[in-house]
Amino acid sequence: MTTQTFPAEALTGFLLLPPGLTASQALAGLLFLGFVAITLAGAVVATGARRLVRSVAGLALCFLGVAGLYYYLASPFVALMQILIYIGAVCVTIIFAVMLAETADQERQVERKPVMVFLGLAGSAAITAALAWVALGTKWTGAPAAPEAGSLEKVGQSLLTTYSMSFELISVVLLVAIVGSLVLARAGRDK
Amino acid sequence: MIQILNLGGSLETYLVLGALLFGFGLFGMALRKTFIGMLIASELILSGASVNFMAFNHFLAPDPTVGQIITLFIMAIAAAEAAIALSIIIAIYRNYRSIDADTPAELKG
Image (cartoon, rainbow over all chains, first blue to last red; front, side):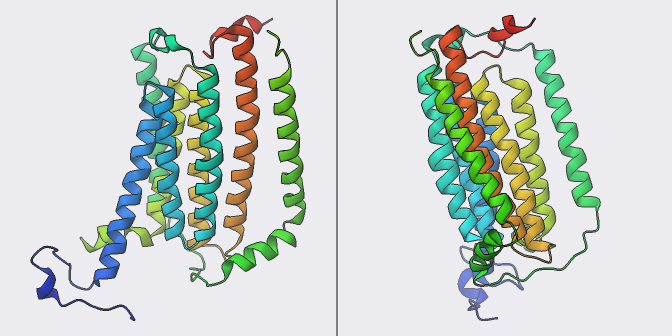
């Protein structure tokens, strides 16, 4: 253990440090709880907000929390890509579409019937509970991978050797998507 | 207390979080009436799947890179999906002056 253990009596005044846990571990745990809270709060806002702009803001918050979770899963590169691509590209594109398409009279739109909302809530809560039950009840076995330094080089190598076909196909998919969205958005422009 | 602070080190935490994100996305798909709201909910579903992949990659996988590669692929697919869906939404908005999902129902045979 290389981390410094703070003397317990120095911390008991303002931080009740549990025994058997260094201060840095406790701080990391608290930060993880903060990221979990950010993720869930963002998901709640993204699902429940009335205005679409607020919903997109909640989505960006949720993506930020998920990036923090990726950092705790020992892949800071994917966390950085999450922030760059999702918050920087996808959320901004959705904001563009909201600005282009959302009309001023969004408020008077008809709401779903409460029965249907309750049915959707019950159905998705049941599926979520089933998934969580399976996740908590299964005895997961496997190689506990130690977080490696320099795992980014391995990602790059296998991206260009083992998964090179998928990599090229993803590039083609992106190209087709860009050209297709240009064509779709261009057609009927004089209306 | 120690258990709560050690939550980041266990696989089940991430799996439950992924399930919760998926559930929020599913509920959003059922709740929303506009196409952009549905797109936002589908992004939540995709990020729940990514969290699961990354958690399995970190805790269980013998090859520690495959989950990260799959997550990067999911990001690329999500970006392409967002571009296509948004251009479809813009096209629908031009034709119908609305992005409600019920409005293009006159398309049906």
